[in-house]
Image (cartoon, rainbow, N blue to C red; front, side, top):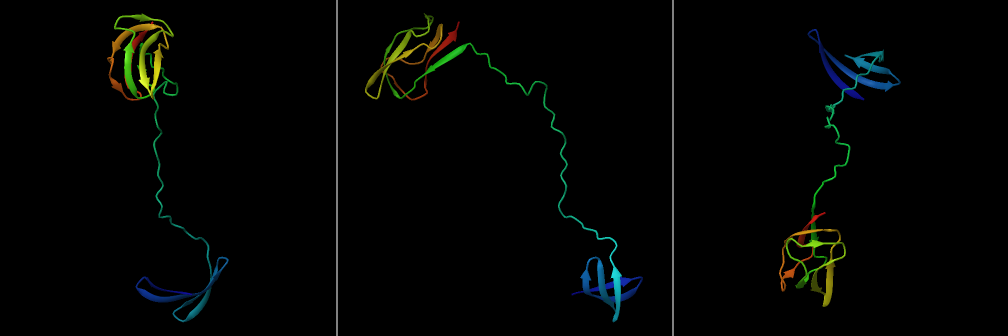
Length: 142
C-alpha cells in the first residue's frame, strides 16, 4: 500500500502499510509483520480560521434619515426647447401654477408647480435647448 522510512533514536526502520481497515492496520517493519490498532487520528487543516471583530454601528444608524431640504428642483422630463417662462425670481407660486412652456417631440408642454413655493432661481431662457433631467427652476418650499 504505502512505504515509509523512519528514524527513531538513531535506528532506521523501513515500514510498509499492507492493509488498513476500521482503525486496524497490518504493517511490515524491517521484514517483520505486525497488527496495529490505531487509537487516534489527527487531521490538520491547512485552511486558516478567520475571526472578525464585531462591527460597531453608531447609535441610530438603523433608522432612515430624512433629509430636510426646503429647495425643490424642477427638471425637464424630456429633451426639448424652452418656449416661454411664466415666472421670475422672487415670485410666489401655488401648486398647479404654470412655470414654463417648452417644446418636446413637436408638442408644446406646460410645466406646472408640484408644490407651493417661492422661485429662487430660473436656470434657462426662452430659446434654450435642454436635456432630460436638466434642472430648469429651483424653488423654496413654503
